[in-house]
Image (cartoon, rainbow, N blue to C red):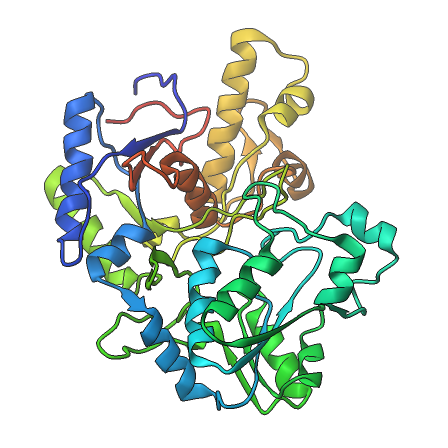
Length: 420
């Protein structure tokens, strides 16, 4: 076994611009193999190929127009009466186009925004302003006029957009009457209308239940719109409009559907082409939080809508600094390296079996409590969520041209060398 000097490597893989109807399996496989040949690196077992959801959806032609969305909205509500829209996120890319479609179908919308921020962290105002105002966000409802009197215009820290004004203008441009309120209890909308479209992502099930329990006549989540084709449109039977984003001024790209067959087909094609067992996943937004704007990136319903079986579970890792400072605090240099590598190898072997854990470097029994200490501080998140965040940061969302990400060495540890 050759010594290994590099740990996890994440590479953005360039691919052709993908259009509706393209063979995404062939494009992914060709792009990965050509990159390996062109950049002179070797593909190995347990490498990971991650593909952004956007190109999967584009290949599927999974799009819907504003008129499609308006027609589907009309199937669920009596739009001669006011429609309450609750908890949309503040985003021109993620929600503004949807809002325009809803307004096109309605006579009046009562729009309820959460404050001081939406569920993914886009702020209407900062927390210091809120605390200074004496307003209780858990109970107080503010009208638009009351919000303006207290806080004035509130441009977003990154976009410079005042989203209250932006959403008001979008609704009015579609000849729809609008009333805007701010409250964090979804049932407050019922003082204005008994039919409600709730647009939250990760809290959608709880919000829907609260509204129904409070007596709303009609409650529909945005995940329940566009679950089937409308006038030949795209659709998503699981997430509906959640995960959609702006394609043109008159259309959105929906979150991809039928993703598990796609990852399995790509994995099989990679094995046929390379002879390597490579894991495959589709990823959307990563799940991380911006320290300045406080935006939680995850505006998609999930980080990964599909992944192969080898990516199931959570990491099982040991804390090297704990081992160095505690188990082997009396060792240095090569002796320390050897002891830690031996401990890791023994622990991983024990983890994969049902035998008690021992450290072969010392032959002492390591109790579960000690192992808990050694694991403490390692990231307790699902592997697909961690990998999706890494892939999202690697590929970016602009003009890098790398909708495919190859991740190597993710499952290796400090003691592993090259086996092939």
